[in-house]
Length: 227
Image (cartoon, rainbow, N blue to C red; front, side, top):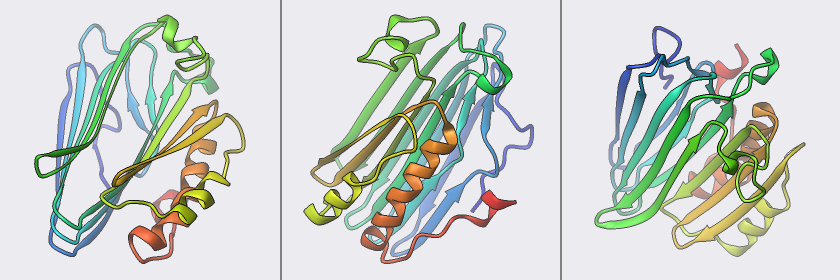
């Protein structure tokens, strides 16, 4: 399934909500046809909320192309995932601060980003980011370290076996840095560097290793990415 937003970008004051429900033992893959662009806000915050629920035995893959924050964008992004017993969620988010190919940096604006995954009353994952353009955290070694592309991939609902975890840790991106963490019922991979394409390629390679495990299917690229 391809998620389309007719205007082609998110402008200041926009408020978008996407509700996704995957039925029992069903499988769905969601993606976008191109990068999501958050435009100059003119002082107005824009918001996008993705609400996803996966019923027992279902599998949801959420694989959007990169998100590009234009200079002076004011963005709030939230992903809330509800998993039933035996359900799996696999997804990634790649964020680019500024349009570097056009010579633009993210010198003004802000980002508020949250990702939560629950199974019933149990919280499996809750990550929140808050960036103000020009903050020290964007330059600090404990933050973005001056790099402008950040990516996170998670697989939630199943505990990764040790051999699969080791196979994932053998992979690395063409540039930038990466890391993988395994927690009960969740695996988290991160990318930090200078290329959305390298981030996506790295996450695709991880998906190639992991999809036969969490979905019993070989990984294939969505055809829309090649059009």
